[in-house]
Image (cartoon, rainbow, N blue to C red):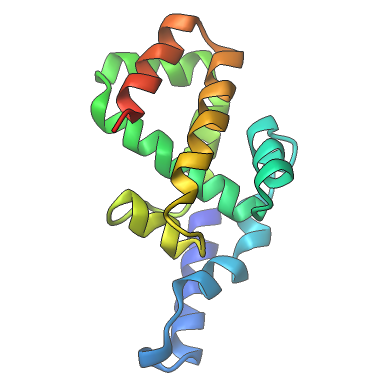
Length: 146
């Protein structure tokens, strides 16, 4: 339902903007209240907004982008264990817009400089460490290593 509403809002924004002046960041800001619903109490989102000065939508989207990036380099069983031990990870992934493009492109689409990726990583790793075992945190860290 949320994704359908987000898609409808994105489509309506597309039709109201000149195709040459389309700005994905504007679309993300337009759907921000929808994406933020239910995650306002998530400690990772709160930490990122407080410490990095990003919006909740940027915190959710950036975190999800990093988690999806880690997922690519992790064994499926390991990522499944992570989402089982920390269901909030799945909630973040479900609330974020569909990931397309490179990690820097995803951050840019959210209205953030790609240099923010390096600032997000320690917060995401601390979040994972707080809810899982040290071994799982190490797997995520290795998956996010350049």
